[in-house]
Image (tube, rainbow, N blue to C red):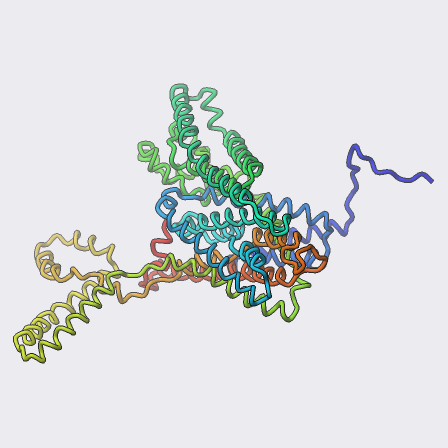
Length: 601
């Protein structure tokens, strides 16, 4: 009987069995259904997708083959690249310029505290300093996929809080990917260390961050102005028709993304960082460079009206662009509908047309399911491993929650007012002992004189502090002179207006939301921990072992719990803030916006 040989020049087509079809269909359906339910409840559908990955994959029921899991991991990583690219498209450059130093401070805090607190593993699990360093490297990064998913789900992408969070998370990720190279080198050289292992990824990342803005400023900007001149001189010509095509923008944006990702990978730095720079450069081109689309496409505004229902929500920066660069046209054509016109060809609109559906329904669920594949759930439930993992998790939660301190704003005028009162009371004691009745009487008289006017001013200022934006309008509508003359005398005493603001409690929601969103570790943490385990760095003997080491399981506990608690916490906070904002809009509450200046774009 002749033996069957497998062809090598092509892949034979075989119809998949019904069992595989049902398993893969159930996986896709479960990922999307759970995502929808969790998004409606707590704004973190990714949490349910991670659990689905655990249940269907190798850690759970093993319904998926290893080959299928590898394919899902690869497709999921494509989804991660698109998630980071979308985060770059949502970058608000005005807010980024205003908060760059704050983002650096948040990122430095989120890196330094986990690295420092990870050395407690020396007494917690008898780890060596090198193993503690590797654990800190795994826990210092922030999951970009989780961060951008939470921002897009909660609607905070274009806010000042979202800009600080996404920038700090990106910086943490760059440092985390530098740590990947460091851990890989340490594992391969058995304790050896070369400076090039750290210098090369870091230098390439810094060089890429400098080269891309320079290329945009001195390459893309002059070329766009040249094309604008050609299009204005020959309206309706070949160049104009090509530039107006949606497919042209799609091809150019895709080439920019692929070019930066490929170049960064071969240069030795993070391809996720390159994806973010690609999206940010396209966002810069959309918002900071003048365009002529609205001048040429004004006759077709009626044709594009049916698409407004599809593209009304995603484009956020188009109205700002219309006001900044096309104000003459906007004055005639009501810029807000024009900002939603698909003919403007912004990066966000191109992304939502070509990529969004595949990312939302297939690639992003596969990415979070692949995180569930990497959780060794069966080895983690051992007595010593459980309590050590929980203790280490608490430390790592604190290490990221402390980043929210940078958003806590304290009123500096409070200590000065308090010090003045204390100083006045101290001076009155020696004066009364010396029998200076003049000072005492004058102080009493002054206090009596002020007691009649101060309560009036404090009550008026307290009322003005609630509806401060409406008070000028009310004063302007009253055209009579007697009301203005009456308000002139208390105006002298209304100088200490900050006094009612001192008594108002400061909102800690922005700080809590920033710290909670930074706690999720995700893909980079699993990558560094798995690399340290497979190279034998976590092993007591220093060599790879068939069984999971205790330090690796403790680190995995921290990564898993932080990845679960982070989205759960930020989802709960977002739900609470939205409820407070709805009550404020409905007039049920007179409190200020819980996000304050951090909720504006």
